[in-house]
Amino acid sequence: MALALAGALSFTAVSGPAAAQARPGGPANGFADLAEKLLPAVVNISTTQAAPQRAERPGRPGAPGGQDRPEGSRPEIPQFPPGSPFEEFFKDFFDRHGGDRPDAPQRKATSLGSGFVIDAKNGYVVTNNHVVQDADEITVILQDDTNIKAELVGRDSKTDIALLKIKTQHPLVAVPFGDSDVMRVGDWVVAIGNPFGLGGTVTAGIVSARQRDINAGPYDDFLQTDAAINRGNSGGPMFNLGGEVIGINTAIFSPSGGSVGIGFAIPSNIAKTVVAQLKEFGRTKRGWLGVRIQGVTPEIAESLGLPAPKGALVASVTPNGPAAKAGVQAGDVVTKFDGKDINEMRRLPRVVAETAIDKSVPVEVWRKGKAQTMQVKVGELEAAEESGLLANAPEEPEKPKGNAPKPTEALGLKLTGITPELRQQFELKADQKGVVVTEVANGTPAAEKGVRPGDVIIEVGQEEVKAPGDVAAKVQKAREQGKKSILLLIERQGDLRFVALPLGQG
Image 1 (cartoon, rainbow, N blue to C red):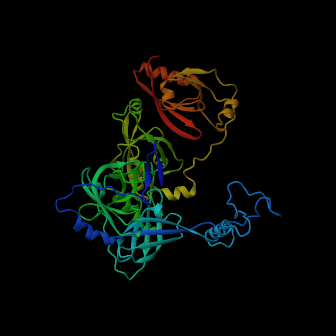
Image 2 (image 1 turned 60 degrees about the horizontal axis):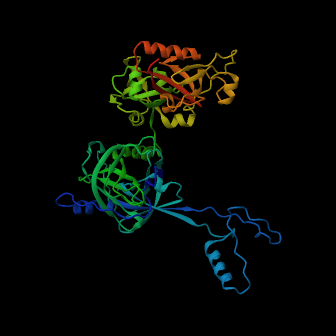
Image 3 (image 1 turned 45 degrees about the vertical axis):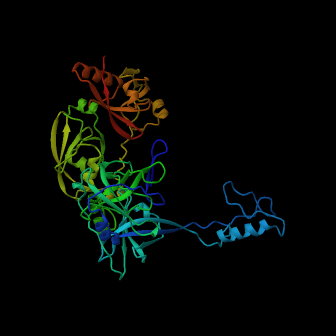
C-alpha cells in the first residue's frame, strides 16, 4: 500500500528496508522487562510469489524466419563475433536469469513483514493483509529462527488485516488484545517488529493522536504514534505498558521511506472484531445500513436547521436496503446509531460495520427541523455486495416532453430543463429528472463548491424541482425567510450529493 500525498511525502506500508529513529526517555525502569516478555510472540512473515513465465518469442529482428521484437519486450542475447569475451558474458547472464527461454524456471518474488501470535494453542498469527496479499507460500519465522509454513485463514482488505494458522510442536508464546479505546494521547506505547528475519526490534514512543483518517480504507481510525515504525514492521504489534496489543503497525508518513516519527496502527478494538470473524467464518461479516452519506458542513447544518454541524447526511438510500425499509430518506442526518453519537460522517460506517447482523437498532435522524427515531434491522454488507444490492436499480425511462423552458439564472448558475440535446451532450440517463446546470459563473460559491456544467439539480431545500423556475422560486423564498444558505441535491453521473450554497443578496 502506498498512499500518495502532495509533494514528495507519502504514506507507506511498512514492509521493506529503512533506518530506525530512536526516541529518548521513557519510564524510569525502562522497557527491558516488557520487551523480554513480549519478543517471543512477535514473528517474521516471509511470503513468496511465483513470477509469471515468459512466453517464447520468435527470433531476433532481421534473423531468418524472425520478426521485429514488440516494443517493451525483453531482447534476446546480443550477437557478437565468435570467441568474443562479451559472448560468454551475456550467455552466462541469460543462463542465470532465464532470458527468453520458455523452459526457464519461474522466479519468485519475496516479501517480508511482521506478525504476532494471539493463540498459542491453536497457532493463530495476525499480520497485515498487504504483507500476505497474492502470496503463493507464507512462512512464519519465530524469534529462534524456526521456519513454519502457514495457512491463510482469511484476510480483509478493508482494514488491512490477515489471519494465519501454523501447526507446530514448537512451544509458542501468545499476546492478548487490549482495549484501544482507553488509550489517550500521550500514553506510552512499545512497537515491536521482526523485519527480514533478523529478530525482534523494539521501539518506544507515545500515542500522538487518535482517529486518524489516512484514506487507506473505508474504516480508517488509526492510532498515530512517534514510536519508530519502519519498513518490515508491517503487521507487528503495538503494546501498552501492560503488555497488551492495542494496535497493529501498518503505515508510516515519510518523505524517504524511513521513520520520521509519524506512524499509524490499526486500533485493537477494530482488529479484535475482524480477527474473530476471520477465525469463525474465514471472512468478514459486517453490518450494513444501505445509505450513501456525506459530511455535514456549517452551511448544510444552517440550511437544515440543525443546531450543530455534526452527523452523517444521507445523500441516497439503497432501494430495498435496511434503511429504506425503516423509512430513512435522502436528506436525513443520522445523529445516533444504536445509542452511539455520530458526531462526524466517517464514524457511521465503522459503528454500523461493528453491529451484529439482523440486530434491530434505534437510529435517530434529523428531518425537517426535528429529531426522529426509527428502528432499523441491520443487514450484511458482504451479502449485499454479492447480490448487487449496492447498485441502484434503473427506473423505467420517461419519454421527453416537448421543449424545455428558457434558461434561468440563480446562485450564479445558468439552468435549463432537460432536452434530448442536453441529455446527449452531458450523457444523462434516459430517465433523468431535474434541472440541468449549463453554466457556472467564475468566482461564485457554486464554482468553489465544485458545481459544474452537466450537474443535475434534483432538489432545492429538500423539495423536488422539475423546472428552472422552481429553483429560482425556492431561492427567493429562502431569502425572504431570512435563511443564509440553501441546500441543493445534485446528481452527477449517477452520484448524488448535497451542496449548501450561501444565498447572499438577491
